[in-house]
Length: 508
RNA sequence: GCCGCGUUGGUCAAGGGGUUAAGACGCUUCCCUUUCACGGAAGAGUCACGGGUUCGAUUCCCGUACGUGGUACCA
Image (cartoon, rainbow, N blue to C red):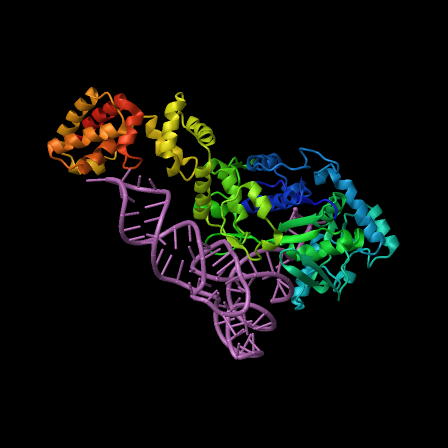
């Protein structure tokens, strides 16, 4: 068997959606598992939808995911160029060949004429509104026109498209790696446009030509392409021979968590979770759409979560490294049905991965986030102590700031509602005495502080429990976080005393 | 409308003619913790429906329902 070659073929029209990343992943896993090549080909044949910066953004996302293409517009390769707009002239020749062989034809119909045909067919009660065998001999195309007329029309500069001629009363079948045998009746397949009036190929022609030229062996794409598969198969048959066609797999869709339908960017905005891999700024409106990266996801967790959304190894393992995924992945274990996206589960994956991270790696990532918030780490020993204590409390990288911010900045607001209602003179006394004792204390370990605290509480005849919450609020500002005495020992004697004194002013 | 694809707890899912129908997320309760998380334990919750085939169907077949995708000179 020839070397496995797969491709991801995005259109540079905006942010990179979850489903797109998953398609990348499955392609990549499959390629690497079989020692093959992963190619990224940019499908920019629709100039009207082209968005500035989208292509670069897609590659940034891949980079963040740690996925590098073996061949692409940035990397180059033996089959360059990898941008379809730069391959424009190539496609036309294949379409012309199809015309010569009788598998395609020139069509001069204007959009209005086509629309008119649809209205008429509908009025006549036809089930089909397609441009197909049932109607094409009534349309303005080279099938109906005399050769001279066609030639004259083309020579006159009349805009035209090239359409595939789909034979009726036939069937086309192929084997999908996920779904098995799929058959289509050609009566339901219309004469799709292959070359547009502007000379650009449509997706249908371009994928087939490029997959052939780039020697693609396996083609994986979203399920939304299934209905147009017969067109592609027919093209393969007419142009290159069905035996050279790649093996297809149509991946299940990722659905919105609530209600019905495919997950869209709008669902993320509405339900408060990201849909794009990274922040995407629309160049026209400057509107920013949140990405998983900026929200505090680890790429490993993001990919892991995506892998499990539609694929399952059949074991109980859920947390996978890229290497483990490559090992375990197989296309026949990909689900047929779409899966609803669950942000809670996504966060669970991130938590798992965060805990797997080494202190060094965790620290590096967290530092960057803190710096964005204006906290610069100067004391690494101190930082590591904090990290060790707070590490497991974070689900997202960005949680670290709220979970540990008080280690770097004294609180400026306090949860007074949690303290004041039960605050009294004797508690105030306790803390004043406590400060005194702390000042004398040389051993400022958590254990020692706790002993001092509890002894003093007993002496003053107050339950330690009633004092711990106020103490926590004094040090943290709120009622969360690790053990109070551990916090105290880390921030140190000076800061502990200072924070208690400060809060005492507020509480009284 | 027409065509394609799909349907195991709320969600992701394993399984597959005879099982107490895995596991995970979420949820509830308890333990840990005089905070909040984490962690540990327990619990509730399911084979869309109707016909076949079969000794037996959640599993196979056929319908129905529902969902989803396509039906563009978009990808």
